[in-house]
Image (cartoon, rainbow, N blue to C red; front, side, top):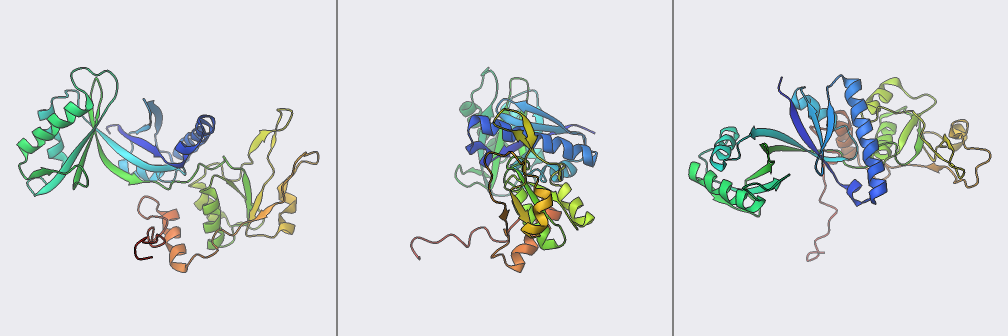
Length: 314
């Protein structure tokens, strides 16, 4: 089977300082690679200039579902290599062969990202030439650079031309393991939902007490290192096991044997009882549950816009 490639898009990670961003991206890549190993999906990670790219020979839908379990990934762009020849007429012909609405009235816009040496084309001149060739070959097309029906997104490299064919939304958030550990008793679906929301903020869940194996397996598809304690450095630069900082689904008294706070710790913080589902409706919980089970098919919330207030209507 042919090898496919995907560009990973990050959101919140890009807001961090360079050192923190690098650390978080390492954690995300480590999680993704281990998820692929656990799922027996061949996956190769690489860098393409400024982009994080993954390659795989597995079915695209299988790989995309796997990457959609990678907390910290905001979106995934499926890349299709079109040709080694950058001729705009050839590329436009190949694009139209892959487009389902040829001959139907619609608008389009062209965006080109050039990587490597300039050679005979820069981004703007290539976008103009490609757009003109598309109109020549399909007269039903009209240009709209604001909100077109079809965005033609091209990656122009010295040795090949590729198209960003499809964008799939990822779960967002932060990669697990970058914000400490939280103890959780996974005894109900609400405990799973609460734990997932905490994982989405970068914390690693440590299942304790009567956690159900089936719930642990659900969350392991999101964090391959679920239950593995985080480690950090103390004031003398020595590594030690980090104590848990929060709990879900159990009392502080029940959690005490599992916190594992150092006796000689210089600075300690009281453990926090977390209730991330506070205020959630049953409809919202149901949507989140479907997202946890099938992230490439369902979004984590049924409504992303109603909380915005219209400044005119109030």
